[in-house]
Every structure is written in structure tokens, then in C-alpha cells.
Length: 292
Image (cartoon, rainbow, N blue to C red; front, side):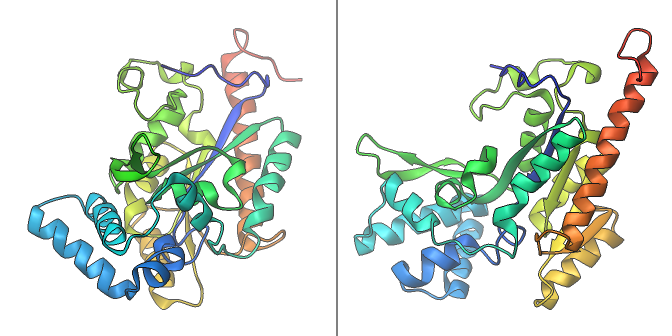
């Protein structure tokens, strides 16, 4: 079912983020699971996961999730929900990430906007839920495990791949936030009646799995931001390609500190969103709000 809109009385705005490579360096499983618990190199794990997907003609996300569980069971590794959340506490983050969300929310509040933060990631939801920034998100949309009555992971419950990521932008747009709700999300809702217009959204991502989200947001008048790690040439090249191909219109180094490039860009994006709210109000007058 559709959730009631927050009763703040202010227009909603959204910053949505990929996780791996955007808020945190590398793939999350490489920091807290693959090397230390499975005892494998990153390259060997991802090669095996890719080979499994190709051999089974399956989804690479489902393949890597299955492989994580299969190898963990063989080693007797704990698979409880609590264990996954504990692992997530050790996830590294890019500079300034922990202070970013409250700062942007306060900045939006001063502009008359109700800013909400979302994760849209192909990584593991349970790991992100254990991270030190989990409390800042309205929802964490990410690949998730299915748990049995003992609360042990037994298989994938949700796989978020490059194309399915766009589903969650539409869920936010209509404020139909439950992952399992396949009815409300498909109901006809006029654009003017949707909770979060795309021109009040910004999506921050870093690579190929983010292209459909970036394309959707860009085409609908929102902002797509290509984030990159300056110490990794592949990351820098990916951001350049996203800009050159028109998928994103903004880019910045993965430094979320106050006053850094991304922070200044966020200020500009929020000011533009607030200005558009005022412009929409003028367009609607006398039926909509008048300018002061």
C-alpha cells in the first residue's frame, strides 16, 4: 500500500545513493566477508560468481548471493541476521560521509524542503543496516537474504540489479515504499499528485549498475551525480564516461566533507530544488500557493 506522506508541511526532496564505490570504497563484501571469513581473494570470488551466472543463465546478483551462502555453510560460518549486521559495522566509508546526511537535511530545512535520504544498491541490505550511517536513511533498498524461523539466511529474498534499481525511484516518486507492494506501484497517479517529482531528486552513483537510474533522473529533470575515487583510474574513467555519455550532468570526488566539491554541489542542487518549488507555485496561482 502507499505510505502516507510525511506530515512536515514542507515539499519532499530526495537524495538517493548507490553504496559501493559511491559512499564506500570497493565492494562491501570484500571488506567484511570474502577475505577474512571465506578465505578467498576478491578476484576469485567474483570470477566464480560470474561463471555461475553464465553457466546457469542467471542473474549475477542472485549468483553472488547464492555463492556467499553456499561457501559460508561449507565453512560453518554464522549466517544469522545479527551476524550480518555485525559485519556491517566494519564497513569503511569515504571521507566526510558520516556527517554528510545531517548537514544536507539541515540545509534543506532552511530552504523549506523536507529532504529524505535513500539507498539503492546491489550490495547486501543486512550489511548496510549494520553500517554507522544506516539510521540516516528513509529506506535501504538493496539485495537482501531470506531468513528462516531461526533467523538464519537460507537464500536470496530480493535481488537489486542495474535495471531493477529504477523501480525504487518510481516507488519514491509515488511514495509507495514497500518492496513487496506490486499493486500500488502500478496504479495510475498523475504527475502533479506524486509525492516527490523527479526534479526534486538527486541520484549519486559511480558506475555501470547506476546508469539506468542516472538516465531516468536526468531525463525527468532531476540531477545525476557521478562520484569517483581519485586514487583509482578506473573510477575516474567511469565518471568521465558517465558525463560524456550524458548519463550524469554532475561529477565529484568521493569526499563528503563540509566545503568539499560534493558538499558545494549539494548546496546548489538543494537551492535549485527550492527555486523550482517556488516556480511551480507561481505557475499554479491562483489555484496553488501564492508567492510572498
